[in-house]
Amino acid sequence: MKRLSVKLLHSSAVLDSKSEIMSSRFPPVFLSTAKTAVAVSRAAKKGEVRKIGPRLYTSQLSGDAIEVIRANRWQVVALYAPGGVVGYRTAIEGKPTADGTVFLSGPTLRRIDLPGLRVRVVPGPDALEGDREFIGGLRLASRARALLESLRPSRARATEARGLSRDTVEQILDRELELGNEATLNALRDQASNLASRLGAEREFEVLDGIIGALLGSRNIPVTAAGARGRLAEPPYDAKRLTLFEELHAALVATPLPTRADPAAAGSAFRHLAFLDAYFSNYIEGTEFELDEARALVFEGRVLPDRPADSHDVLGTFALVGNRDFLGVGISDLPDGAAFIARLKQAHAEIMRGRPEHGPGRFKETVNRAGNSVFVHPDAVTGTLLHGFTIARSLERPFARAAALMFVISEVHPFADGNGRVARVLMNAELFAARQCRILIPTVFRDDYLTALRTMTRQGHADPLVQALELAQRVTAAIDYADLDQAIAALANVNAFEEPSTGIRLRAPNPR
Image (tube, rainbow, N blue to C red; front, side):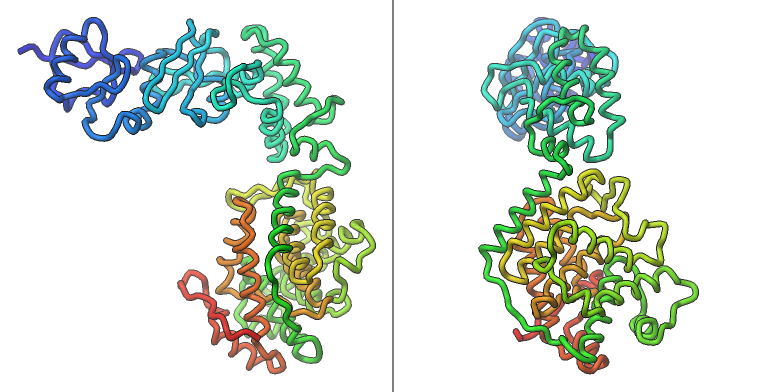
């Protein structure tokens, strides 16, 4: 018997009919050709391969055709459109449309329908400057090329349209500015200018050039995307964050919220709770002290000589949370948004006075991030805070205002450092001004609290954040702060000082 061999052309699996091969050596996916049709037919009859599309076969004998094609998507595309340039919205989105369509440029118009995958080849030039090598000998269009292609009008229904709406393109470009990538936009515009004539996309370049110019402030052209409108407003604001603020506002209006009296409104209890607030709030941010060290620092002024900046972080926080005059002012007491901005800067200047390198009392000048979260662009900080202030102040119940205010500050992240502490200080000021119980976020609850914030940020789900703050307030309200040692013992009894990494959870006391 003759043996089949496998020959790879352009990294695509096409069988050579000169010999025969066992199924274990067949590629996962391959096309039958005129030369290999007989051999492939024999292999199919023997159960060595099976057909899953027009001339398309697989050596994977389990799983349905959709699964096999999905697992080998780009190899399949390369078989039907060898050397094609993956472009249009596919290059921008990095995946098929909702109905499984991918778009490429190639020498001739082609439409191939497969289980779970539709390949659409649009007549267009081969690889151009900036296009990159891709799977199976395909090329991937540069971002500039793909945007020009995507701005071409398309008559297809939305899920199968090869292009993107102008609104979507504006959102994509606005995101670059949100990340501080102004130079990226300028470079993209230059590259698109060089490609426009070769793609026959002069009109599309005019649109792209206008959008970029408007976003950069050099062109007076209207934009429609909410994020772009926010950026061009005066002052600029982050529209995505406004949506989050509104979602949290709606949840706080609709959710039954606690009303708990402050258990430490006067006397030594006030100072003791303030100390614990400053201790926990800094511990969350990585400024960690032994409890006895922190007590000596706050109540005896014993600054650790080898940690002066950390010591001032705790002292600065305590200076605010232990100041009745500062805590006694809520956002309802402020005359306007400008007073709110001034109050934020005052709080930051006090907390960060030991760290001049972080610009105490000054808003950030560069984009900041935490893990995968990118916070509000410096240009949009003031406008976003002003909108957040208005939304938070409209809430009737003190707990709701406090929660909204904390999230607004945390989400905007207006300063280079110290944002979490400022957010919690203003949250507790809102509660104290309304004679409500403040909220301690103990060490053991750090991950729960931060996870709830991330859930609100990334998914817009408010319930975890509201529930986390309610539990933390319930614990805070259950403690008697008149004697600090007894208060510490009571907090230890609910696991407040345990590290989250231990797996120990905050134990909720009986409601108070």
